[in-house]
Amino acid sequence: GGVAMACDLSNLNSVRSFAREVHTKIPQLDVVCLNAGIAPSTKSIRPPLTTQGFEACIGVNHLGHFLLAQLIVSKLEASSTNNTLGSGRLVITASSVHCAEMKRVQLWGRIPG
Image (cartoon, rainbow, N blue to C red; front, side, top):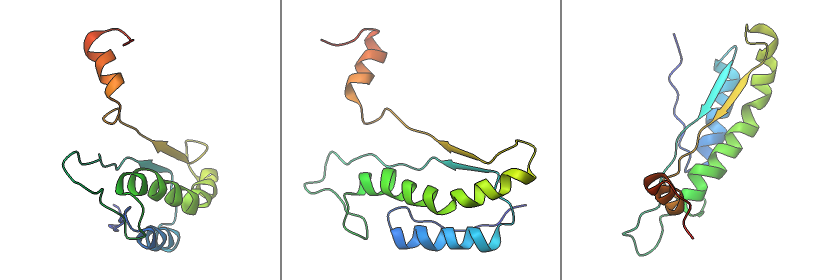
């Protein structure tokens, strides 16, 4: 079983509220995976902004994740004494969608230059 909760990474107030909920509703937190991400729009004239006014990709992919990790890391550390892994885990994933040079390396098998 689990507890359904919402976290909007484009709104730092939502991230703070989510972290408070985690601390009050979740007795033990063994693993957190920071996996959400957005790619920049190539069609918009002006980049979309987060609620706090940051460019959306930076706000969601970096600032939202960083704040969330900082607010719940103590819960992971506290849970580490009660789980079979020996310590809580914070897993962060990334994508190469933003890196055109890496795509060329993967497609052509060589480093451009």
